[in-house]
Length: 296
Image (cartoon, rainbow, N blue to C red; front, side):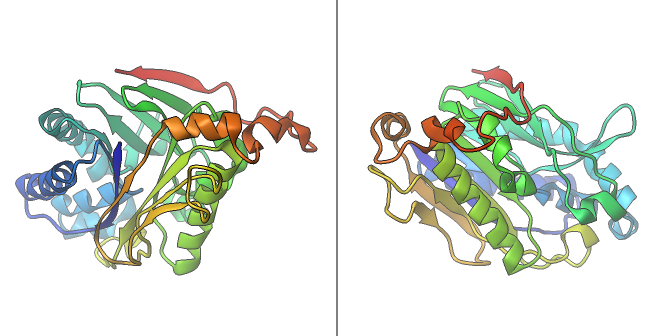
């Protein structure tokens, strides 16, 4: 199977059709290269705030509400593109206001058969807490799809091992990220690689790239796409299956054989996943129970 993970630059849009044109081009490019799963970054949906005008962009709450209100249209577009091109898409995450007024950071997974699920971020960064006011929301989920079992750790969540441990039945961990500095990129990347080591699965990291001063929440962005596996038999010795170029927009592709995940868990040179409980505190369950969502 071929994966595509985005180093995604943000743009200002004069109207919805401009966004539709951009997203269609990105999906068409990856599908044309043979990708079956496309991963967009954390908070890349914030570019939709430009549809609310300069006033919305300049006010964090207005920007968030503009994006949140547009998500029904976003869902329709992603589902149409997933069906048209026969791909699974982890859409760009963004702020979503719930009925009780809570603001969450939500990423949606879309399938070519018209199914949709979502994962909310659990642990907020300092800036998300204040001034943004974004709240974490459980549960963690594992999505049972035609491609295999998929889990999502949104950015900072990937830096906490008990999250992915709770999702250990997945074979793919998707890590959409938004990092404003090189050290932030590396924190998330190290987390994604460590989770692949511990759970012996494949992690897929996407990033926003480039500056976007119109919106404070995503004004500076550093990163690139990357796909990582356990550094063990059947995988590269470095664990790096593919990586892009820092701050260069575009897709990073990786050919993966998910049968190798089962093989390395059963017959690898190490058994990190199976031996987890032998460490002090290894019997701690973490943020379980995990919700299994069937999207096929």
